[in-house]
Every structure is written in structure tokens, then in C-alpha cells.
Image 1 (cartoon, rainbow, N blue to C red):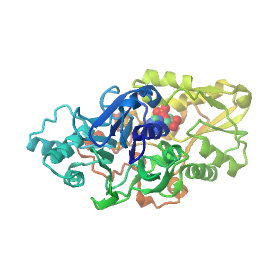
Image 2 (cartoon, protein in one colour):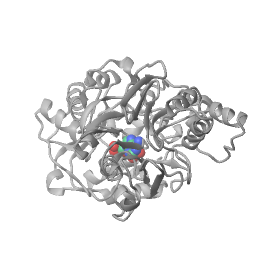
Image 3 (tube, rainbow, N blue to C red):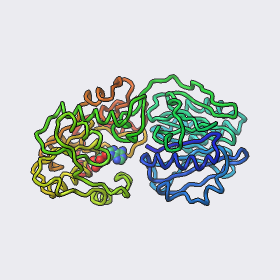
Image 4 (cartoon, helix red, strand yellow):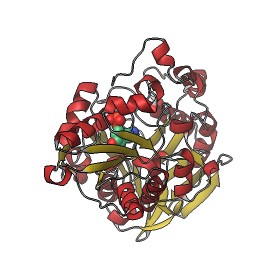
Length: 467
Ligand code: AMP
């Protein structure tokens, strides 16, 4: 995942960026950082933790200028305490923020090696930084440097690139991750999602198109088509990642999620007394299910708002404990009820198993688990923390085995067609890799991590971690 946010020609750009990153906290909680420019030099502050933990008032005295870019990191590779962004080298006039992942770094490494740039130990974002820097040092203008580099960036990226007086925003040819432009007074902001525009008081202008580079300079905003576009937004942005108050491709994320629930109610009607969402991710779909089925909605699980997302803990043990810390069952709501509990997805199965047993322990008579997306069977290589297929419960167990494993009376996943129809958009504009195994951007050497046959791990006696 990760979030990027930038401010161009904005008074106290770093402060604007801070509030932008704050609104995008859901896209990454591992680390946060901002680089600002006052037209002469770049200043940086970054660290591990939440936005509110990383920045202090005094940091903004140092982060001067009308230009800034920022980043919230969600660890996809490497140690969770390393690789904070923006990438910036001391005394250099370049900084980049990257949302996405390059599943293959062969091409870019080869290019840098040919140019005698030392790339040992660098991650994908740092390699991109070095490539752009190489051309800048050769005297290229920022836009030309990026155009030269783009052919070597084989993967997924929403990039913000800043020099002393320019910001460039680039989206890969498939536009896997979202990125939008807003207007703020006389300046511009660039954000992973529209929700952050409202927070900083900016007005939405438009999305950056797949394969497009937009350059912000003193003379305004200029657009270049740097790659032939094929729109393939990750459907998981609608399923889980994006904030419900964001709009993607003209669709309200909240409304699409409600549609998932409405569709679930048609595909899998259950005789139940109550619809309970897994907060917060299951709320819109539960409202949609309740609306169509006429079964009342209630909060049977209360979320402690001060615990951040479960996936952030690196070990399985900590992840399991996290669910208990995060959710508490409401006995008086659940007791003696036939409960439909709705969540957006099952990944490892850890959360669902805990939730079902919590609801039973609170006295429910039946627990039916409904999921507002199809089974996640394939790993993501475009910026999500599920690199191993054997960790995905739906790729190692059948639906009835999962039902037994999580201890539910029944389990139902929204159909693939149901999910697509609910978005109101064409299937062809989506990347659906985690559900379909179809990877629109070459995953290169990572291909060996995928087994397209379900149960292959069982044949090899490799059980999922969650079993
Ligand atoms: P699990 O316990 O592994 O099955 O995780 C499922 C829960 O994690 C669901 O409640 C989802 O809302 C949430 N989830 C799904 N995908 C992700 C992700 N990439 N990062 C963090 N949480 C996720």
C-alpha cells in the first residue's frame, strides 16, 4: 500500500503535507516522512511510527518552503524498521516518494550497473531514486530524466519526485494505485486518495492518468504521456484499502462497498436476527446487506479506535493477540441471536477465526460469516503484505475446510461477477490478481512464488501458518 502526498506552491507546504499524510494514515503505519524545499535546498524529517508520533511542532521550523512531498510506509519488503521514505540523500537536490512495488528489479539494476552506480543493498524505491539522480547529474531536466528512466521501472508505482523547484507525479501504465490532483489556493496538492484533499481544504481537479507524468513548475502544471496506458486499478482499493470517503474513477468507495453487501444479500440470503459488521472494514457491506434483507444492523463488535491495523505486527503470534486488543463483543446484542457477521476479506484467516469464536462466546446461537469479496488465493506483488501464497488460507483449504477451521455455521464469499457488477465499472479496467491470479504487470522472477493449483502446498505437506 503506502501513501504519497505532495504540495506545490503552497504556504507552509510541509504542514499541508503533514495533514495530508494524517488523512492517509490508513495506507501505512510503519513510518512517515516529509521532504520540503525552499527553492535552494531540501530538508527532511522522517521516522518510524504513526504520523502523529513522527512529527513534532519543532520539525516544521526546519521543514521550510513552498514545496513538499511526504510518504506513509506500509512494509511490503525488507525490515519493518528500515526503508523509511521519502528517499533523499543528504545534500542532494532530489527526493522521491513511492507507493507501489517493483516485483522485478533486474532491468533497473542492470542499467545502474552499466552506468557504474553502486546499487548494493538498495530497495526498489532507492533504485528508482538512483536512476533519476543519474540523469539529473548528467544535466537532464527533471521531466526528461524521468522519461529516460521510466522504461527501467518494471512494476507498480505512484511516484512523487521533487527537486529544488519542481514536483513530478507519475503513475505506472496500469494505474494500479490511485493518485489525484487538487487545487489549493494558488497551488496544487497531489494525493494517493481524494479523502486527503478535503482534509487540507483542496478542491479535486482530476486523477493522474495511467502512464501520465504531471510536472508542477513555476509556470503551472504540464502533462506528458510517458507510457501507453491500460487502466488496471487494483480492485482491492475498493474492497479494503481506500478510505470509504474517497472517490476512485468517479465512484464513491463507500457506495461500492454498500453495493457489495446488497449483492451478497441477493446471492446468499440467510435466516438471521442481526447483521453485525467487522468494524470498520465490514460496515458499508453490512449496511447494504441489511437494507436488502430487512434484517436489522447492529454493532455487535466494538473496535478500540486506538489500535492500528492488525497486519502491521510482524509475527503471527502478535497478530493473533492484536485481534483481541482491537475488538470486543457486545454480549447484550449477540446473546441468543442468529448472527450474520460481515467482513471485507479473509487473508490468513486469523481474524475470522477469532471473531467467530468471540461471537459464539458472547452467546450467539448461530454465526454465519459473509465476505464482501471473493477468496484471496493469489499473493500480491504490487504493494501489499501477502507475499507467500501458502499464507493465504483460501489457496490451501477448500471453502468447507475454511468454514470448519474458523468455526462458523456457514461461510459465503461474494462471487467474482457480483463484485465486478457492484462497482458499476468494466471488469477490464481492474487488476484482480489476488482473486484471479492474473497479473497485468509482469512479476518477473517472482513468478516462481506462485502455484496456480490450489492445495499444492498440502501435497507437499506445507500447511498454512494459520492452521
Ligand atoms: P486475516 O486475519 O489474515 O484473514 O485478515 C483479514 C482481515 O485483515 C480482514 O478483517 C481485512 O479487513 C483485513 N485486511 C485485508 N487485507 C489486508 C491488508 N492488505 N492489510 C491489512 N489488513 C488487511
